[in-house]
Image (cartoon, rainbow, N blue to C red; front, top):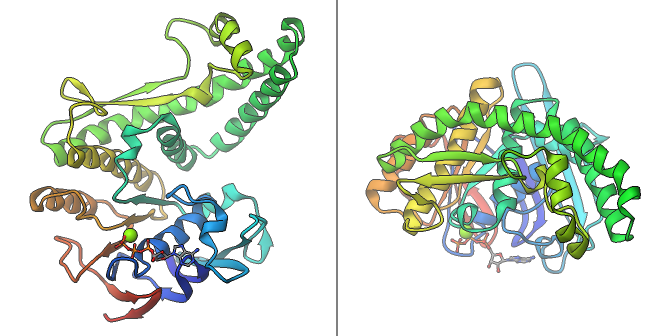
Length: 354
Ligand SMILES: Nc1ncnc2c1ncn2[C@@H]1O[C@H](COP(=O)(O)OP(=O)(O)OP(=O)(O)O)[C@@H](O)[C@H]1O
Ligand SMILES: [Mg+2]
């Protein structure tokens, strides 16, 4: 679990040091007090970037040189200290137990997800957010996925560089072969993962929306074609765009509810519930396959939801064995979720009240 978090010079937070509850911590504060900033700092440490799409220069507190985020994680056997420090130019240093460590080890050490007021963008925007969320799940459930993914990314980068340099079809052959070779493992891991995820997603979405939603995995190239055939058929487009236009890097998730794609004909509140269902199903699956809990953050869960739907969301969250951090504008009861610790925040200063 995430035992404690220390944040220096991040957004409006000058210095914060919070000991978190093993089950649920509440953060209460007015608009612009620093609630989302705290969650963003934790997310940044775990994922290497902000969930608000901010660049690093925005994250460093105005007037400060650099920001530092340090988490203490522990289970019954050991304690891990994970920290990152970066400045506005983006240059950063990451350390796990005082040793320099690559970003993916942080993601592994601090499994973290967030449901925030803009979570509907998961359904509304392009495939990148959905692919990242899917890959977060695959990465946490299948330990070899990181290697498969990196091999594919390397092959893709080399092939794209060759396309940019105007390589001839003959010269492109070797890169295409590498791309196709490494695509198999990435696609297989994702597709097995989604098979596992679908039953959970149907259950959670039915709890939240009354009827189950459907989840479809799109692998990134046309059904019925081998990737090599699909690449060959896309030759014209890739020459124009100077980039590889088909393959696992274009994979997506299609979410359908009733007879409509989730992007169309569902209300904003329903979109939030559908997106939350996808995240909760992934967190639930991760919880079943690993002993260490996910840190699930809910930023202002009441936003966009009526009392009834907020109740359903909180009930679904309460049923998942995750470590929770919840924010709210005012003192509220998060139905069914017992807050073990509560902090009030004002102008970036956190004070424990319970
Ligand atoms: N780099 C920065 N340096 C200093 N302050 C910043 C920086 N970036 C953002 N802020 C300020 O931090 C404040 C807190 O923002 P934050 O989004 O955390 O508030 P919040 O408590 O989540 O509010 P809301 O309830 O409106 O969502 C804002 O006033 C914002 O202008
Ligand atoms: Mg906020």
